[in-house]
Length: 306
Image 1 (spheres, rainbow, N blue to C red):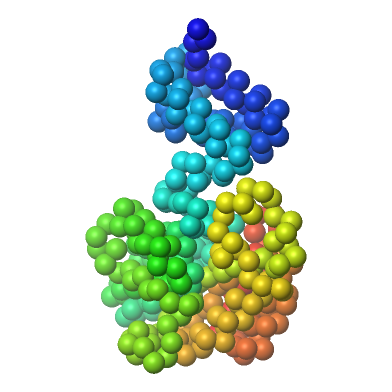
Image 2 (tube, rainbow, N blue to C red):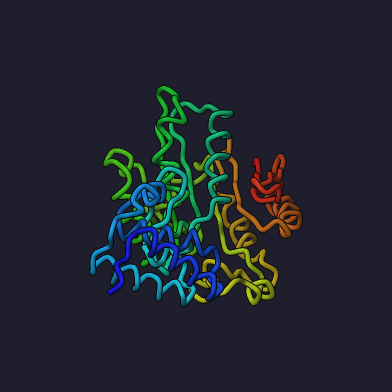
């Protein structure tokens, strides 16, 4: 009977994934085994001689079979890391990407550059797993040291199940005082102007963030299998041009913009940044619209100063 230790099972899994043309074979093998053994990836290499028991081998085999079907690792393990937090994710929510972390960085930078006394109101449109909103809430005290200033974060989504995932993540990650400053609203992008919510937040939001669906119908056809077969289509596909959801947001958000200071931050596809900038200028008539690049020097974040 084969005795499998960490080194032998890793070597086998990496080669197996390579032969089956699974993307990132070493990373896949290591992350899955790390989860099974409850070790960090670094500690795997410090535990090469550790022998796996039957239960560990069975679970690793289960994970490998799922990975062979191109199920993303985050969905296999039901977890994803974003900035300083670990989120629960399933196939109902988009897997958070490293590029999206730049929105949080930019939001903090703008808040530091525009110190406010009183209350800061932040709105995330289409929260999904809650990655952006929860990260802001988790980090805000350390990033902003402004006396006599409080904050409120509102996260919206049009899917009640997805909103439940975001709220579940917030409860598990945030302490009670921060969680109390968050609100999760089921609606199509933003509540209508005839609601109590609108009465509370009319002309009150200082920062509005969104990573909406922005994949065009043509581009959607060419997405990798792991994305197209497993990640929620509704969180990816925007329509024929990829700009449809942005247009809806821009058309409906104006009554919520604070006259004191307000910025809208969008994540976007590099190929859509220029037409999105032009659309924003036409609909919002802002003071200025700028585009910032991601770590790969690609247009990624659109900043609208209203």
